[in-house]
Length: 286
Image 1 (cartoon, rainbow, N blue to C red):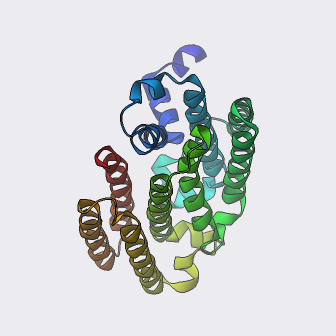
Image 2: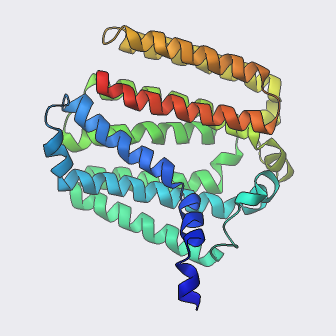
């Protein structure tokens, strides 16, 4: 009877929501597109698809990322009951001890796969797993530090591709910078969205210590630096991409200026995901 209940579609769907299956798909897709279009020039895509070692590396990245989502939900139960009560899974879907067990098992598996591929990738995976745990346990409750760590780890997923193929091309670095910046912006917007719960449980995020107005000004500054940096980096590669990025960032700025509710901040966070997706898709035309 219990086994049958676990097999229900609702259980599977809720579990996939907890590990952010769509986000994990994006991580894997980004690494494959990076390998195919930025390093392979789109010519040897069949060899990359068939590369078992690369498949293992992408799998390890996805596994460690999913472990990070599990431990984040574990530590955020009380906060999520305030900010997103309908999305709380820990304690409802899975017992807390099983979440910890799953987190540990996934991390060990991801790190082991990394060392199987190469010592360097194994070490990178170890530190990624460690900082994802440290972020959930401590850093996300501090101003800016946690946001920066997640942004750097996002960029690191692209560096792993270059490390695997032994090619650390300029294009990979450019897209890593792009991914890091847009993730940083999204993470701060998420802090604005989660202000109520974070403040109740003693977090010290930027919106709490600076207020919403000053945090918005800080995001505008990051967007400006982001736009200038990425446009300078891709200006010699493409004419269309800087224009498209400028238009997208203008929409983001206007949306942020008008936003003042949790729902609007959530929409902006989703819009940042769309920008990330468009950036990934743009690799096809590089």
